[in-house]
Length: 248
Image (cartoon, rainbow, N blue to C red):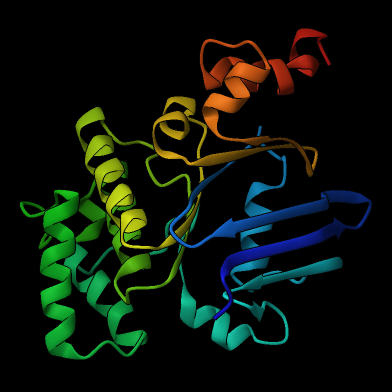
């Protein structure tokens, strides 16, 4: 695999007359936790869906581990784990059974899978609920199960699209610790979130996009210093809140 985990070059995605991603350039290293931030409709999920091979780009290129997302789509899918914005799960199955199903689909051997699931549910704090049917779960529990479904096959790259939505503070901190451990073990991670404190605490670097264009890139501290802001939320508002303040 290449030295760079993810490479995006002049990426463009159009839907009819709408430009969802407009000339995006990014490089993300192995072991880097990168926050992809932006207002609703900025192009974050579209970018992730191109990386995970669900969408084809209009122009440009993208690769994961050196493999082109179009020409080497099967290899890319082996390397990545995806926690989507809208979780997909079977409500009539337990949380554990949902995770097992995804492990089976990825060909994880049964003995390895059982041990791995035990380890994952402990780390993310689901031991007391994992055998309940998923349809009985709260929104936060579903998000945690969805995260484990994405990671049970031990991918090299994780695409986490708002993984902590609807979580209480204790659950969110457990997921933060879990994500940090993944990063420390060398996984490359793209995280989208509307919780700016989450990005500020977790991310090595963040990229802020608006209307499909990258408008800021750097570590949270670098951006706070550059824009003379007390926190990342203030940076975000300064860069993306103009339309709201102008009443557009």
